[in-house]
Amino acid sequence: MTGVRAEGIDTKTTHLMAIGICPPWKRLDTQACRRSVDAIEAALAERLDIDDRNVTTLVNAAATTEGLKAAFAGLSGLGANDRLIIYANMHAGALEPTAEAGPDNDVFVLWTKEKPAAIPFAVAEGDWIMASDFAGWVHALAAGEVIFILDACDSDAVTPLFIEAHPQNNANRAEAVIVSAAASQFANFTADRSVALYSQQLAQSIADGRGTFQQAADLAASRTHTAAIPICDLQKSALEQAGMDPLSCAQQPTTHDPEALLTRIVLHD
Image (cartoon, rainbow, N blue to C red; front, side, top):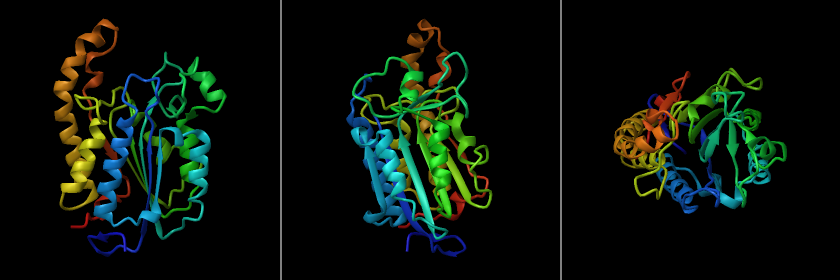
């Protein structure tokens, strides 16, 4: 048994795919994403009774295009009685930097030892992938329910891909998307840059919260926005000097849940 719904026993078997990618060429501790993944996995496994056998972890060097394809292939047997939660902490951004990030203009940065010469080359060579391709892999699975949690810059830009805007979308499947930042915002790390800020807050809210998954997500969104204020204040002058919007670091996580799926999932004591 994997959870209790407000209206009764939850018969879904919950599966978790957790992805964390901090490439070594970024000016960030590569283990920051490992910490994010570990915290989210521990909180969800405890509060939703997820069996270790139903957890797939892809961190750093394991999270290449081929690694992700293999992981999705391993979930090909999921069916209507399965719930899949996908959590990803990674870098993301526009394929064409002069245009805003969006469903057709967003790239997921996967693991590479060296920084690619250019974003289009990385996508063309298969080192990085379009968000739409990742969404296609998700929609191709036959799980009865899907929750996608994305902790990345500009993360809300890709929300439509995981609900209604993808050609493979199954209108009869309950799907929810939780994102760490608006389409024009950074996803901050903590002040000491040891872990992704939203991942830290979501894991804590799930671990300590009482009630539903939605309530934990709402609490994490509020805590993240508040915690981002002093972190953002330290970055504003540098952003202004770079010609960027100083408020792009004013992080506001958001939940999209047209079927009210998250309100039906109760966290176990």
